[in-house]
Length: 126
Image (cartoon, rainbow, N blue to C red; front, side, top):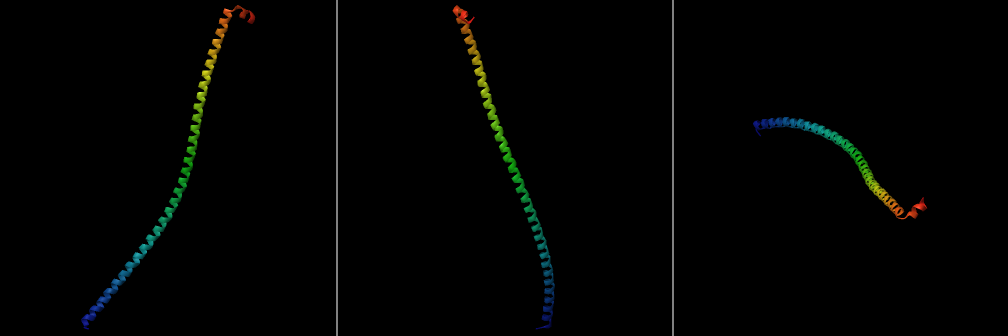
């Protein structure tokens, strides 16, 4: 082997050592970056779980409010039905009262007509 070849190999080894040191430095930098990224992922995961728990709590509360609103809506609809039923009953009672008044008037008119027709009725009632 020639001296030139040996010198070249030594230079190549020295250059490779420098490249190896740079690669190790770069690798260390990558590991630190990975560690930082993993830490950020862990923090983000923790934050996401916290947000998911809050969302679940809010969903539970909204569901309870929705159930309460449904219950109130049912109660209102029941009261509306009661009002309609009572309005129908009032209307029927008003009709019955008007019919009773008409029947009473007709009966009174018939009595007056019979009294005028038959004098003995006035004598007995009087």
